[in-house]
Image (tube, rainbow, N blue to C red; front, side, top):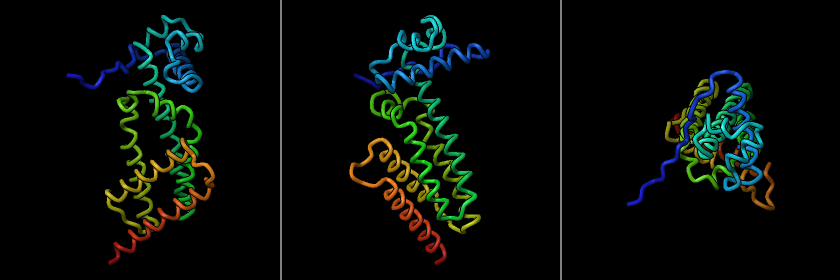
Length: 214
């Protein structure tokens, strides 16, 4: 009877000193570069050690194997993207409702675009990527950000959404923008697609507001 393959995705030893943290960061950055250039199959601990400028012993001091290094890359990527999304949400809060929606949706697209090469490898080549805790938790974190945005929308624009509607909006928008960044449709104007998505989202939100009045 076969079960799901178990991967060792954790650090062997968590770096605590500044020098150790610098070594681990160099290993993670080297891993990310090789993933982009050569894909998951091209990543080896020896290649990473060479690219990072550290000994193979240093690699194995902190990582049990290449799977843990890839997990660290994915975790760092999620952290960077979520921080950028948080900043985009804060900027959007200063705008009127419709420009804020346009800014938020365009920001999500640009954040995905900026990381599209690494995202492609992680999502399409790494068999265990959804077992990485940070990746598995990203949807919940996006939903949390959406709840923060919704509270502002309710406060300033009197638009009330159920958690179910908010989940659908977040999931559909995120999936559409990720696909747009990773696999842009040939012959279609990206700005026009973002404009159309923005208008659809605004219509849905206004309908939710108007429906709440009746």
